[in-house]
Length: 351
Ligand SMILES: C[S@@+](CC[C@H](N)C(=O)[O-])C[C@H]1O[C@@H](n2cnc3c(N)ncnc32)[C@H](O)[C@@H]1O
Ligand code: SF4
Image (tube, rainbow, N blue to C red; front, side, top):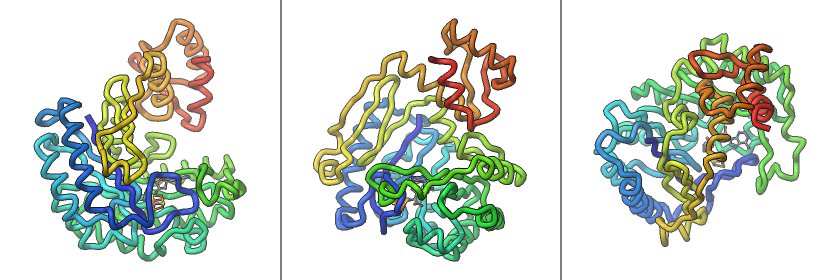
């Protein structure tokens, strides 16, 4: 199984971001981490975790680097016995708060992969996105990570924003590839409800030719695309786990967990979460919902969709797509060669 831990604190709110995070609740950090401990103890029981059962851990946010390694220590002591020997343990990190000391502290706890939110190496674009760091800070943080001994380093970029030009994106990719990374996530800007960009839909501007050019440029650097937004010479085991439909514990305010066909939603409100971290909404997915999810996830990623998952009618439609080379069939699994068409293919098959 997988483990996701959510840290809902940020130094500032980025204009595009709808993830659950607070910029004014830093005084709750310590009680939040204690609540996380309580929820995790409960979940390890509920998920019947045994030695060697947690394959990956992902600490995401919000901004995990706003919390000191000392506060993570009890959590690591709690989960350590359940981790597989080669567990991938990733933490997200923001360039302005992931100091050398923070990175070293997290490494000492067992974190073996860092994922930096960079978004761009263009100072004006960072300002537009309301990021709390400069391009130089991002470069330094990633250089430190390598010096400290992290071998698995990823960075996030955002494209398809108003004002993006080929030159700007070319420079972002050149800077990214000059750093010691083996994974890159490139996200097209989406306008989310409740964000500063909600009233400025013009901020998102996707040009298909530019998107295709970005995908190609990244792959020319031998970073294989293994999902619509993810590329690397290393593939994140945690990401792959989600797309393989593995079970995951979701700990923290606004996290989501999944066990078989059940979803668990702890409170998003940080105070409610701290008061009762094991109170959560439970949603039961029907077999059909779960089946559809597997199809959508499979076509969006390198995991593909086992033919067994499809109904007879869907198998007929799939053979049309195979004939048109829009799907590839290998050893009973259907693969999508163009992730930009993923949802279209899934809808065609299932409707
Ligand atoms: C969960 S966020 C947190 C990462 C970290 N706090 C940071 O900002 O660096 C992970 C990534 O999602 C991407 N992201 C978040 N909101 C987005 C949006 N509306 N459109 C496109 N990408 C988005 C950003 O690239 C971000 O780095
Ligand atoms: S993108 Fe990261 S730093 Fe910015 S608000 Fe979202 S979680 Fe916080």
